[in-house]
Length: 355
Image 1 (tube, one colour):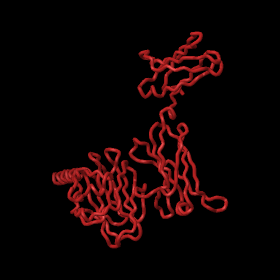
Image 2: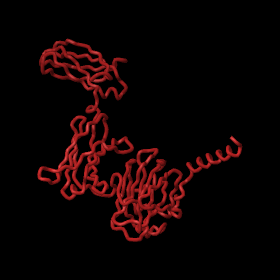
Image 3: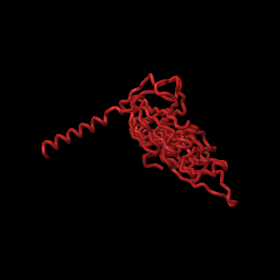
Image 4: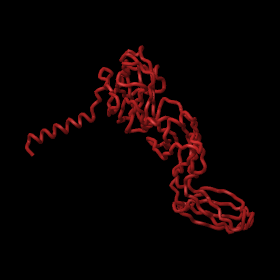
């Protein structure tokens, strides 16, 4: 490669690296970027700073925790009807995602600020805020901030349609959940007005440790024999991991927007989802009082002691050992003792292969 081309390549690579770590140009409100209708803009929060003279924490309260903000704006002359601010494709170092404030006011004159919307996601879902009854031919400010040390990449858009989970709208139906073992039973109800707007329902699920929700089911709106809308729906979700799960039921409207129908949060314990049971065939008579002594097979330390009364001869009982695998114990010894006769029987189990 000629020296001249080589130097040009080196210079180009240096410029790309510099830009990748540089501060975004709209870090300060004076350099705020305009968002045009239905056009996505990609940005990031790392290396951003806060212009404290241009924000007022008293207006946003606990909704926003300013750390590394940047500024956008849009003008309503481009749109008719409600405006949606969509945030998508978040990729953050932590779970919590970005924060959004929509402001009506003169830039950096905080006494003129009116907060139209404030959204703190606490995860990296695709979300939107809906802005109604905006002034015609009027400019509004958008402030996007990341949490402390939680640097994020994200896409932002001002649009005439929504994408993702609504952040500032109440649920338009009712939903509830119930846990049976490792199965979550979900049900929801919508009135006729809402049903007339919806084509199908999307069931979103997020485990507390996950960065974003995932669509686990899509259920179409149905009609009854009389041609009317069915207002009550039920479904099930089978889980394989313990934890706290947040469900959101979204309705996809005929206009392509999403509305929140309802939410439910459910707790699944380890016992419900674990296969780590051991089956113990006890060679004792009906009504025998039996003591089970559970030992670590490696160091013979007593782990548990429990008693039971047999309901039949030679009964096989199941003992849950899943809590032991969480402690790194995978092999156990069980001594079963008939409390009356003193007869004992020993068993060995590999928990990881037990059912």
